Length: 292
Image (tube, rainbow, N blue to C red; front, side):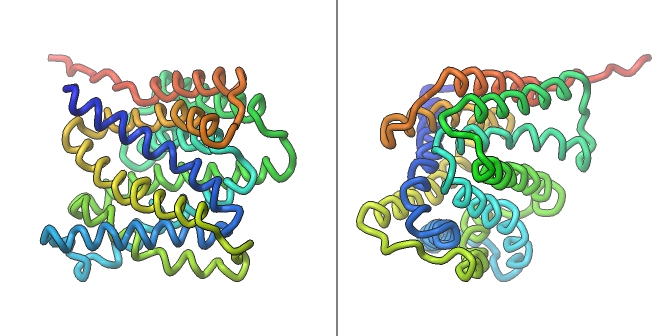
């Protein structure tokens, strides 16, 4: 890749990994429902306004039902699960759990897209699960019933993200990526607000929490999605997926720098094993040559 593309790649990793720090700041104050809905609504409005300014037709009226279904899988459920997980888990472990996305993606691609799932990928999935287990079991949180539940809920986020990728490939490959980035967030924000009765506002947010929400929405969601789709066009989907297993390294750094979270040897070992497993999963399978 060129220097400019590397800069975009590193910048996107830094932005997306910092989102877990911001969630940790305001989720305990706003509660999961307002955290997810606020992020989705603000980011969606910013992106829709941007598309209107540049005159881009996202064909919202024609495909609003499809945008909404994608939004449930790609945005509403993952953002809500991360917000719930942030009540118990540090930002570093949220980033590590997010790196399960390619592992789930490989399984779903084998099930519904007919992609091969040989021994190498099976070993990769196993190593990924081992890495996640080590990172959490030897990390900087005390394992309890509450943390186990938080981990289980958080893992739903990368699972749904991977599932949304398969859904888009099967049912929505004709949709413009800019439209997907904007409307899949804005259209589901009201749905997430329905969770307010069971997840009310915990306390009145201060300037720190409001600022963190705005930064996350504008940079961690709106700008990051635009940057991601630009990078997707520049270097292709396979290389873009490597962002997922670079993010944990950044999220551990952000957590330590801004929140004073501890980086333990167990987290480093677990993260390394998971990255190795993910690389195995993402490596291309050999093409069989037809006999003449």
